Length: 139
Image (cartoon, rainbow, N blue to C red; front, side, top):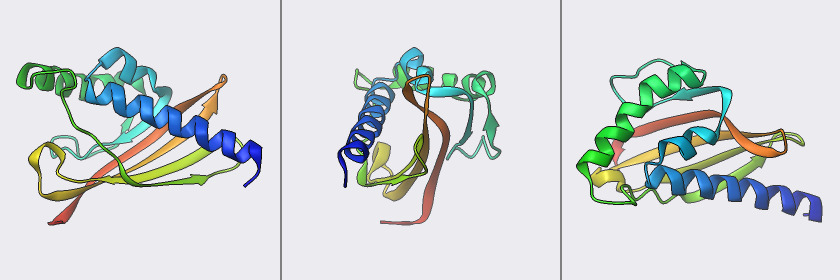
């Protein structure tokens, strides 16, 4: 891998680490700042079966989840999100697909899967798509 590709991976890994940190802390403002204004999100929540498009819709759907979590758990950190088997796949010069899974998320025995598309916009890596799902079987 050349030096330019290594720097790209390091920048995407750093953006992912920041996303995970602020998600674990349920820091809504910092979390929302990780996303592009036109981001799309597919949530693993039964009450959110459809794709969410744009920050306004995303905030309406997800901010209450953060508020409930902050009220329910001591913290920060409130969550223990720890990506496993992270895979980065470049999608041209300014985009990267990051896939990983989560084990024992909030006590669930099922495997949780995540795919995030980061795109470099205005000099920083932002999430333009997040797909979160839960495997139908226990690990």
